[in-house]
Amino acid sequence: MNSIYSILPLIALVLFGFIQSTFGQTSDASSAIPPPPPEFRGGPRPEGFGPRDAFNKLGLSDVQKQQIEILEVNSRELTEEQYKIVRSTDEQLRMMVESGYFSDESALRLIRVKTDAMSKIELVRLRIDAAIAKVLTTDQKTQLARFRTQRRPLPPGVDLRPDGR
Picture 1 (cartoon, helix red, strand yellow):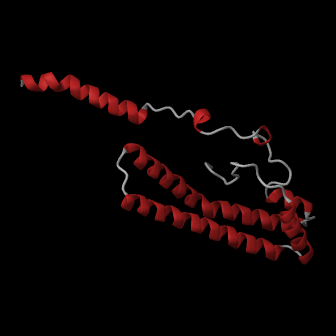
Picture 2 (tube, one colour; picture 1 turned 180 degrees about the vertical axis):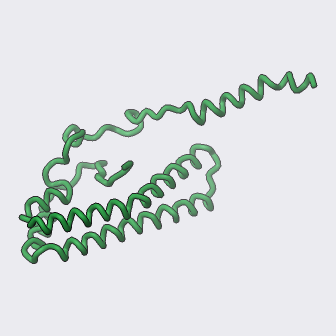
Picture 3 (cartoon, helix red, strand yellow; picture 1 turned 90 degrees about the vertical axis):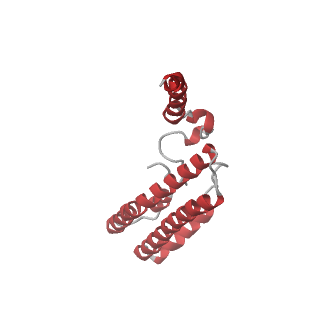
């Protein structure tokens, strides 16, 4: 009985360390990820970035705007769950590496789940692009293709995917 009491402080210390390392971590995003360039901080995207800018230049009718809006809403709804899966698998992979319990087999299983979700997101994007193309006139499709070739490239390290919605 005496030996149990002698190791209680050690057990308490180990338990406290585990709780502190699990729940006490503060994520200092400012040190982990460099801030975006000033022109990308807050507010609307610079002109030329994103489909809205191109659609605004196409002279869409009210009916076309409504149809495209419906397609965009459906796209967000269809991909929301898949983005959650991608973020979750990224977090699980990160935790596996940080914990020291990394295994190729477990990592490959998670990567397959992530890849499947990313493939589904891309399939939705392609379906929406095809559906939008059906809404546009021939002239609007030509203008859109021209806008896409003329847009400025993104600065290095800038990613406009909806991450963290």
